[in-house]
Image (cartoon, rainbow, N blue to C red; front, side, top):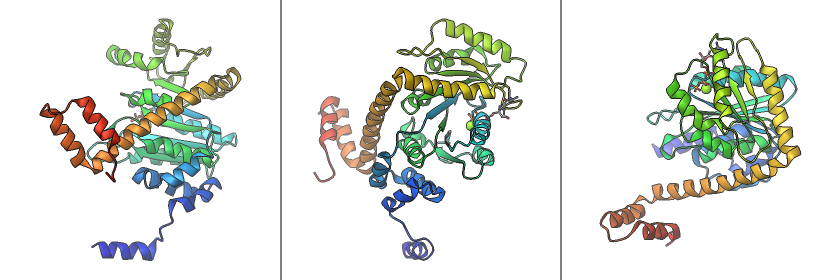
Length: 330
Ligand SMILES: Nc1nc2c(ncn2[C@@H]2O[C@H](COP(=O)(O)OP(=O)(O)OP(=O)(O)O)[C@@H](O)[C@H]2O)c(=O)[nH]1
Ligand SMILES: [Mg+2]
């Protein structure tokens, strides 16, 4: 079996080392970008050298996070934004984090097809990533995909994540501008859950503004915001916009608010702090993922410590210290 697999790969598809793809990524090759993101998604540790090289060329893109409850209209809005932004001549990148099933781990094809329809030739690059539920939150490869697009000259780069848990909080660690979508007609219970994510919004969008209930949703949202759900340490006042991807209503206002927020971050100096915080969160995220990954591969080492803690022979703090100082060679 293995022999056949190796033979067919050698024959049909010569393997290019990830590091060799870097110059092509920087030159904007769509094929190289796609392959590099796939490498990150398959095994970001294997692609680490290439990703480290790519990181040196990042920091130019405006990264926009779009989040909201399932079905809020995020993908439809992103499609509309792609059309509008590319018609301005901008190279738009999109990384959509799909709510993949923990069983299949698959990305939802529909979103990809729909958004790719909107991706004008060579002006937009759309990529769906599976979340791979077991570790939770934004996978490191999601932010690495953003790095790849940033290094390749895409800006803005939009990250779409479903806001149902930690994701919308983690999106703060990735993006410069956060857009939170609230669809009209949600029940009070969902409104309450949503309250937690309101304070991360730089821009509030009541989606599906063509629906009759949209006016009430705007009023309800403004009511909640008047209670003080604003982002701390900022002089920015988050606008509330009622946007319809169907009629196009206020789509241009959304675009200009996004641009205005980016300018505000630069002019006020808040961008420096935000970048620093984003980097800090990324380091800790990466450390956590690497740690968990290591003991997936060496489950016996973890298991020994676990059993010792269960047996009360070792305390959790000491076990953690043993695992932190453990390395493959020891
Ligand atoms: N009337 C109306 N319907 C909309 C609008 N935008 C999206 N929809 C509909 O709302 C449904 C969900 O839209 P999506 O864009 O897939 O929502 P989403 O937030 O990406 O959904 P998930 O990725 O599954 O969380 C679809 O049936 C859309 O056609 C809008 O502006 N007006
Ligand atoms: Mg979607």
